[in-house]
Image (cartoon, rainbow, N blue to C red; front, side, top):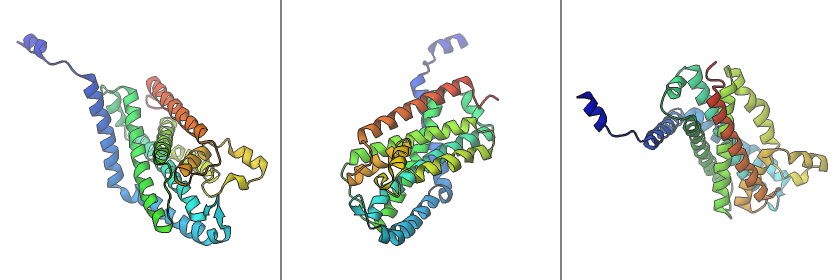
Length: 269
């Protein structure tokens, strides 16, 4: 009887299983973002208000125009992108390290989900938070200034590629981190300096030649300027090069994350 039942059982569709697993990870991440919205969304909104109030209104009066635009208009895309970067990164590193620390990452590892789906699910969750916070900061920006939209496709593409890149970066950080201190090292000592020197608050044309040349080694400069070009039509870098770098970075980081997961780095120690 059991042999008959086994012979008539429908075959398992791996594509459906993988899609369900991917959706489950993303839905769980979304639920976590919304459940603790006071920690995931509000801080970036408050920070943006402070930046606009201090840098945009007070200091901006002395700065005057930047790149042919009002200073608040100029820094608005940079502030939006800054929030997207920090939140995409922070969501994945906190969530996946929490799964490691809480020992429930093993449930994913013994499931029929391949590692490329697991990495993709966490990256999509990070992108989701990055986009939600980016939208919230955009609304704040509209309270303080008017945002031109010249190239909407470039805006969306730069937003998604940047969010994906830093979500994957957060995943790698979570893989290697052995404690909560190591989770905070990269955001504090790498992301924050790169962001502040990434053209969020100024055009690199104002810098001396040596500093301008050094700035071109900062990947965040390309992301911020590609995003700003979508709004204002001005950029300190070649936008095509910026998109090439973002695409290459996303591919390299995703590949590295999957390879490390396959080798069990950071999850089987």
